Amino acid sequence: MFDYGSAAATKTRFAPWKEMENRSHLWDRFVPFSEDLWPEVWPVHHFSNVRDPTKPARLGPQFVWGPLPDSEQSGMSEEQVCVAVAEFLDSNPPEPFFCAAGLWKPHLPWYAPQRFFDLYALDRISLPFVKADDLDDVPAVAKSWAQRLPNHETILAHGQWRHAVQAYLASISYCDSVVDRIASPIATRWSIVLWRRSAGPRHEMSPLSCFGAITGFTLGRSFTDGSSSFGRKRLGFLSSWSHQGLRSGQLVGPFLLA
Image 1 (cartoon, rainbow, N blue to C red):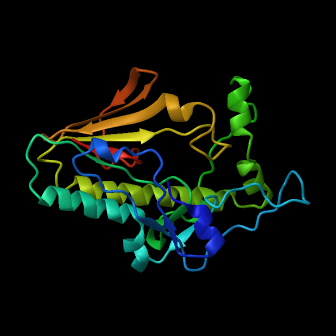
Image 2: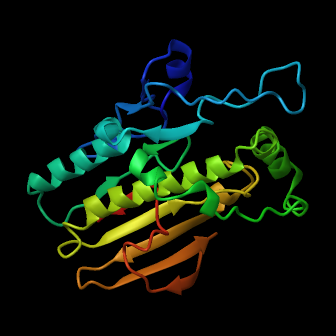
């Protein structure tokens, strides 16, 4: 994962990659992330603690968002993935082969080039419906995870919900563009599989809440004849299949090229 904490503490523009779970020895070639770019002037929130005004807000250094100049896009971690995949494919690897490419966004922090923010005017954003009793039917341990940080509560208290949704949408659109740049040149030659990790309840604004992160994912595949199939899988069951284009905008996150 990226060490945004040290970047925030040292006021540097690049968050270094901290290796935690990858098993590079299992791959013939493994290219890790190196760093991720932050804005020159951070739009870091100055949220107060909505549950105890005498204390600082209990929000991590990742819980920030804002636009980057389009000219600085090349410094983003997803651009490193594009370069690594292109170099691998240009090396004419023997077939068949398996190439996996993981994208960090739209995980927090929600930084993206300015033109992706421009796609979503604040006054036209539809805010998601959030059920007040969304956690009433989940186990106690899941509820404790979802309520450990008052993310949504803090955003509402500071009038930033619409801005946060804009940044999330901008990050998704940026990821869509990255997937398109990697997949489009090779879609007629190799099959492409996209795999997205799912998130938890909407009020948590985190992929680690409840049990969505470990029990659900979205899966899609594009075939060399131009057809495609998409669906959602939870606990080993595949459902809700539909046929949509590769650029539907619904599949983002880590993906596989196979």
